[in-house]
Length: 161
Length: 161
DNA sequence: TTAATTTCTAAAGTATACTTTAGGTAAAGG
DNA sequence: CCTTTACCTAAAGTATACTTTAGAAATTAA
Image (cartoon, rainbow over all chains, first blue to last red):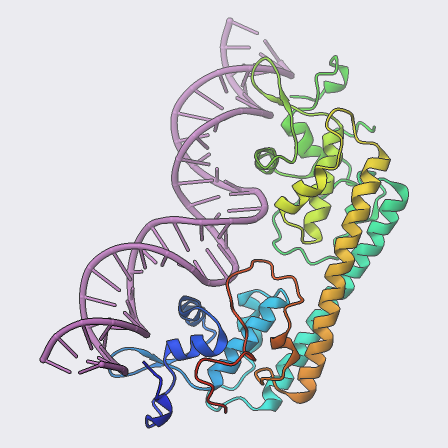
C-alpha cells in the first residue's frame, strides 16, 4: 500500500508504516494513542497520520517497558518532551537521564532485598518476627493494596510459636 | 471467634486466623489456594483448616511477590517443598537459594540495560539503527508478545532518515 | 473501475492478581 | 437457644496492557 510513500508529497506515515518501522502491532499503536503516548492527526478520510518523530516516541515506549515502567509512568516522563516542535537529541537525552535515576533506584532496591534475603538464607527463617524481609517498607510496592503488614507486627492474638 | 483457639484441641488454623497472622486478606488466601500455593483440609462443616507451616508458606509468597516473581513461578519454586512433612529450615533455605540466583540474574539484566542506556544517553539516539538497546534480546521479556523486533532490524522498506 | 488492502470504531476477550457481591451455612458467645 | 460473626461458593468486577472481532469506510493496485 505505502510502498511508494517516499514519492508522495509528505502526508505523514500511516499506522501500518509505523507498525512496520517499530515492530509494534497496529492495535498496540492505537492503544498507545488512547493512552496519550502519541498524538497523530487525521487525514481527510479520517485515518491517522504520524510524524517520523513518532517512531522515536514509540521506540522509547518500548525500551521503557522493557525496563519495567508502566504506561502511566512513561506518559508522565514523556510530558517533558516539547509539544510543538520535534524533540531534539537533547530533549531525549534529558528524559533518558531522569530515567536512569529511576533505574538506579530500582536496582538499588533489588540489591538491598537480595542482601536481606541472604540474611534469611543464613538464618533459615522466612517467617520469624525479626526477619528483615518482613519488616521493611522501603521497597516499591507496585500497588499499595492495603495494610498487609507482613508478619512481624504483633498479630491480634499474639500466640507465639 | 477463635479467640481461645489456643485452648481448643488442635484443630488447625481458620482462614481468618491465617489472615490475621500474615496480614493477607481472606480472599487472597482463598485465591492462593485456588492457585495451588497452600493446601488446607476441610473440617466436618466444610471450612478450611490450615497448619502453622502455612503461615510460613504464605509469608514466602509475599516476599517472593515483592521480588517481582509471578504466582506461576512461585508455585513452581514451592514444588520443591516436601508434601508430606512440615518443611524444615533446610528446605526453606534450599528454595531461597535458588531464588537468590534468579534475583542475581534479574539484577544483572537490569544493570546491563542501564549501561546500554548510558550509551544511548551519550549518543542521544534512542532510535538509531546501531543502538544497543534496540538490538539485544538478552533481557527477560515478561511476556513473549510476538516478534516485536524493535527497530534496528531492516524494515520492509528501508528508507533511512 | 473493480478488487484487494488497509484503516476505522466500539466492544469484547486475554492474562495476572486479586476484591467485591450475593445468597447461604457453620461456629461461637451470651 | 438464639444472635452475631466467620465462613462458603460462584460469579462478576478492577487494573494493566493489549489483542481480537465485527461491520463498515477509505485507500491503493491492477
